[in-house]
Each structure stands twice: as C-alpha cells, then as structure tokens.
Length: 262
Image 1 (cartoon, helix red, strand yellow):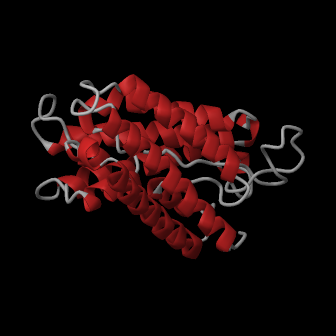
Image 2 (cartoon, helix red, strand yellow):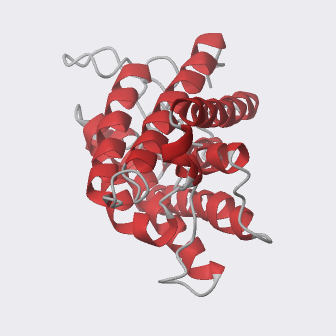
C-alpha cells in the first residue's frame, strides 16, 4: 500500500476547501434571507459540478476523497494506510473550517440567517434525530456506492467516474437537502457549525452529521465488497491509472471521490 506525501495532503485540503466553499456560498445566497427561496435543485447542481471537477482534477494526487466518511471507509477496506487516512481527515476538517471562514467574511449579512450554510434537521419533516440520521446515512451510502462501483471495481471502471460520483452527490442533495440540509460529509457540516456556533443541541450534530455519514459510507463499502469481492478491486483505489487514453486514470490504481461530498 503506497504511502502518501505532502502533495496528497495539500490536494485534500484544497479540494475540500473548494467543495465546501461553493456549497456554503450557494446555500447562503439562495436562502430565503438572500433571494427569498432555497432552491435545492440549484444547490444540488452546484454539488454535482464542483465535485465532478475536483474528483477529476485531484485524483492523481490524493484520490479526491474530500470527505472523512469516504476516507474512513477506504481505510477500513485497506485502500489507504491508517496514518495517511488520519492526515487526510485533518486536512478535510481544516478545509471545511477555512471555507466557512471565507464565506462568512464575504457575505456577512446574507449568510448570517442560515449560519453560513450550516446543516439543520427540519422540524417540519422530523420530530426526532433518528430520521435525520437515516437520511444522512442513505445519502452518503449512495455517494460511496457510486465511488466504489465506478472507481474501485475493475469491471465497472469508467472514464466518466467523476461525473457519476458528482451526480450521485448532487442527486442526493436535491432530495435530502430539505430534510437535513444534506451534509453527507462531516467536514462540510462541521465547518459552518463551528464558525457560526450553530451546533444542534445535545448529541444531534454528532449523531446525525458525523455518525450518519460514516455509518452510511461504511455500509456501502461493506455491501459492495460482499457483492464483488476483493478480487474485483484494483490493488489501491486512491490514485489514477496510466494506460487509459482519456488521461483520467493511471496504472494499477483508480480514482475515488470525495465527495461528496457534502
């Protein structure tokens, strides 16, 4: 298993920063306080386009995780070293916090009403935290399913994996956004919650936005491993492969997200 270095760590920091920055910006600017309506179709489209770009751009450096739930799952599946996974997660949370700070600096008034894009379980739909946990878990399950199915399983390998992974996140956000704000990524949820001091009461934030995505991603990874078996996987699923004419992949390894996050 290849040891990562500073280029991979920087890629995770920059990639997570950009992903979370654009997510928080679009959530803040399409809020009721800014434009009068929260348009989850537009927000989901931003998730899709930004994540697809970042997966393609940084796959060769880090594998384009940008999501602690994805990194934890790939570490459990032994696709990345534990020490590298720890640094990845630190970089991802740092990127999420930096993104929230920049958004707050840019749009103080417009973003304040929605805590600069912080996630929140909708009391209109849910009366307890458990449905929010399930929704976050299912959304992240879908994202991890796309990552595994298009970038890890050899027979399914696709040159349009970035688009498929970004699309999985965007579609999940369009449907789950009205319910929980569609964190689907602990780093994306933590950044604005910290900057705006908008952590939900009790253990809601930990249960819904940290544990929910991690459990969902782990279940997806375990399910796909059970369906395909380890023999169908590339030796490492964190880097791009060199014999692909598209230039998206590199030898003996395959891209994965992150992404989505969010």
